[in-house]
Image 1 (tube, rainbow, N blue to C red):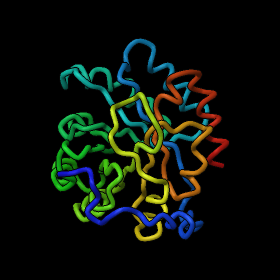
Image 2: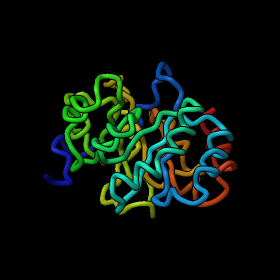
Image 3: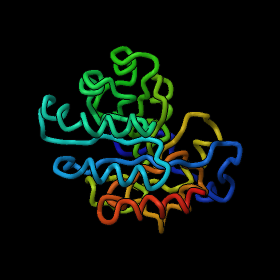
Length: 226
């Protein structure tokens, strides 16, 4: 596996020819947890979810066993269910199954969408990280994914990144496929607008919310998305 997209680089003029398809639903917010979801995080999450519309929440914890992850997830999952926010588990098909999660998000090394579908059933959302690769995205679609995620579009401290797609990949995807595309990576209320205009169906955000006043951040994103 290489970082190079087998389909070749995007045409420099691509972004000028493709912009957001107005027939697609409005872009929505996809909130990703910080790595530390203990302590008072549930209260912070409640404030965030009550501040404005959030479509999905991704539970992303590292370096804890499944029993501890399940314990941490329980109050968070209940908050999401009470507010009709999809609860998505990062990386782990097994944890998603244990929790009865609404979905699972897979990195390129976290399993096949077909495996997730077989384990979790037809109604669970399966998302796949595709970095800056149109090839990976089409493979994910063929394997039965429900959404694809492109990024990182901007510098981020949340996780190490080696891929920096151009926003025009969102325009290309939305022009050809109905499957939603998630934009991720360093997105803030100040830099989100070009990704929305390019065709992102969801903005995945983390530090822009948890790095400060979570309620104010959600309201600021809502202003961009409306």
